[in-house]
Image (cartoon, rainbow, N blue to C red):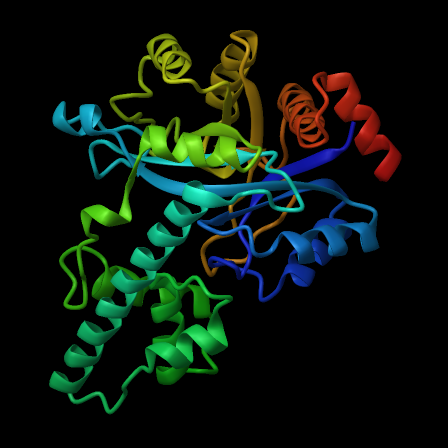
Length: 340
């Protein structure tokens, strides 16, 4: 059994890492042998991920992430896994095919939602420049330059915060703190450069599931579980009801970003969901400027408990088997063992 991190963002969306190579170097140095790329709206990093893993004898998992909208939950005012926006639902895909097989209408839908996401950030950049002029800051950001120099094609509001920080204080000792403050005060709701996302930025939940399946993947529900104050969203507070609803909606895989949760809650939720037949996997995201370990930990412990490590291992083996067109955890385990 090896350490696994099945959810890592790279510069193909936004990442604490400057490159795929840096992410994999950290994984290898920390002894994390199974690693999953999981960028927003993008499979563009898969080739580099596979090559980088092969060079380090790591096992690659291929994922993707979307923000979807469930109209029924929105109408009911139900917070799902976005604590601030009822109905808005993050969905990951696990075990997508590589080489990429997505084509036709599903590919067009993916490209359209990514283009809409980029367009929203471009409007935000223009609004930020208006504010900078009005405040006499003597700084203007070039959207195309940001996209060319700081991204791999997908541009997010965190890239704007990074570009502004580089323009204001390139030698800042704590860049993550400054970028988070700029994003919070200027780009989030209530800030002078905030631009609300258009309805076109959110595909229906069912459509997202269909895109993931067309790409060979497993639609996966990311649980928030307990926050720092021990609170849960409306959807997730009743675990049994949430599990039943997810099954009815066609999900058979779930994931957790472990630093969000206490060990006790994570063991309760992950253990129950695995017993209910879900594939359960864990990750770190790394989709903020802050550099954290690749080896997973919980909010209250420096590493995963033996129970959680075992759950994560079985989940990784199930995903690896799916990627290879096999149907058992044992088959996935054999594939990983042969590689690492």
